[in-house]
Length: 179
Image 1 (cartoon, rainbow, N blue to C red):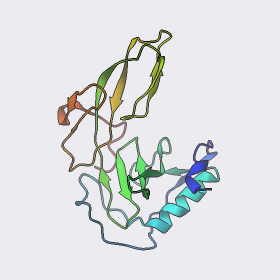
Image 2 (image 1 turned 90 degrees about the vertical axis):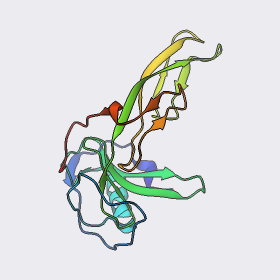
Image 3 (image 1 turned 180 degrees about the horizontal axis):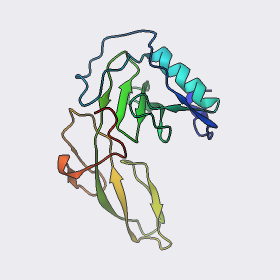
Image 4 (image 1 turned 180 degrees about the vertical axis):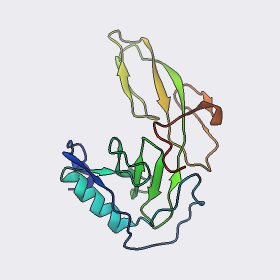
């Protein structure tokens, strides 16, 4: 069973994330923007954090100190491998588990309007992972839709409603972190 399958358990207390790394591989990513320097974060660090979190520990963001929405995360790649990183959705701190320095993401958001099919009451957004719906099949529904982008990304077009988003649509994070 993969370590990330146990991430849903509510953690009992907050622990400051370790900032020492076990390795420092070179990263293909551009340098960090608006984030103070942190120790490199590598795959063994991610495995340790994922294990701690699966055992109920709630880790704190090493940048802003928040325990609310921080932790090791993974994302399936098209080639079947997994991308491992740590992220804080309170301040936008992101760091790949490849030994690279962190960066601050940005979050463009918009009101996304979807027309449900005549046989559909529930919609799961492939952009922001929000599930929303209506009591009436075929209704028109809206939700706040956003996608976290790296500092070197300039925007995106919502694949649901074709809205073009850029820096003017950026939502401010709850905390500025170290930036």
